Length: 392
Image (tube, rainbow, N blue to C red; front, top):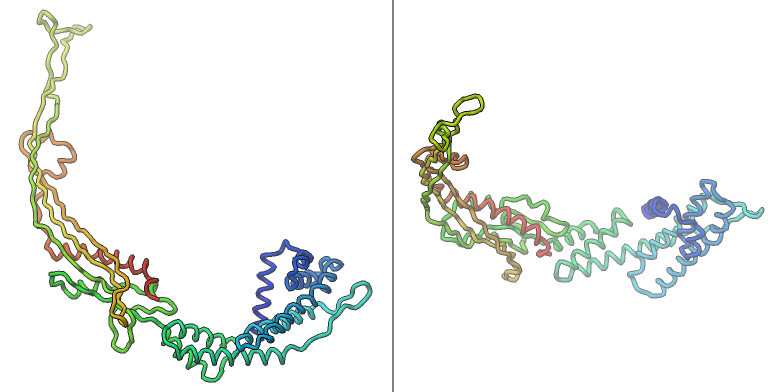
């Protein structure tokens, strides 16, 4: 009861922060009598507009109570055992509303004392709480006898509901542990190498060595490896299906670059073959340009690896794949160097960067597989997070 009253008071605070501009009279006109009571009492406590708030409270309070009491009568008339949680909450709300009303009473209006007879709801609250707890306890036991995870999860929630009534109730805690265990889905992630390559264990295990915290949820537990004493429901395989590695290739491209550069000076001549003079009588000269050439031999060292893989969700209870998504990765090695002959001044700046570089040894097959594996791991993590709702 105390918990519910505290929650009721919290709701009052939230209610005022969200509805400060709506008057108690407006709530009353809408038929929202509980909100009208809360609003008017709040204003009365602050000594605001008493002449307008007290009439609203006088009319709204009994109507709010009547509405709740009629709901209780209706629920009890149903005769089903699942009503008592709602009945308990309504009785608790009636009691909390009465406590709130008592905080501003007695009131004086039109020279008369305004008050309402008090009702002791404690017995009703105690009875409805006990009946609600008994119902949830019995219903949870029935749910735990059913197959499947959903009934166990519902049983867990109902047993937890009892904790809001009683800290200790029969063997509620042990039943909740059973429900949690039965309702939890356990999955582990494994690697499956279907390629022709005999890959190192450390490489394979690193591919599935990922942080699973964001994959885990209230009812789903992921593990990085198989654990003997856990009853697993699913295995999520990172399946390596194929690895292709190209031959090491060196391709050669030959081309020529040229530039025009200044090579000294030459005199300007007139039509008679005489050297031209400027206004000061000096010989007129102009720059002399020549075209220079350089022959470039450009060599490309190329190698690539391609990995085909997939994320496969395997149901261990039915021995079937329930979901699969392909992923693939490419890793390229591309090294360029060049040699040049002729006049090296003809080489452009970009080509100059590779002229004179030494040839390099090609990366090993395994090193390129490791590099492509980093891409596969990143893609696998993305798929696991994107498709984490596949496992329920």
